[in-house]
Length: 128
Ligand SMILES: [Zn+2]
Ligand SMILES: [Zn+2]
Image (cartoon, rainbow, N blue to C red; front, side):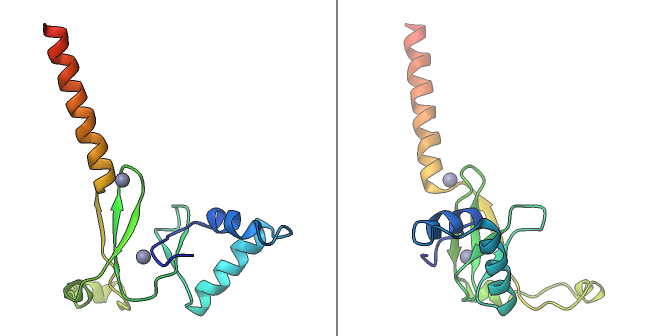
């Protein structure tokens, strides 16, 4: 598993199954939950979303592409020491600050700009 990967349990299962044909998805879920409890991996997203697992344990932040769902790690000392509002103390104690930036990745941007270009050219052609 590459550190930049953020697979969900099913992806982990598919990868491992080639080597361990007797493995069940349930075992993968239980093992990942255990690794999470031990702090070996962390989970991403809220509980309502499909849980994904992060093999990168360095303090890092995420860029999430809203088009394709790509989750890329990035590092920022500034964000690591981000000052949280005092009002948070009413809710609980902050143990880690994790920033999730949403946007459109380069790959998707390329696709979009190509689409716009081809849209323009078809519009021009229809006018002629
Ligand atoms: Zn994308
Ligand atoms: Zn990550």
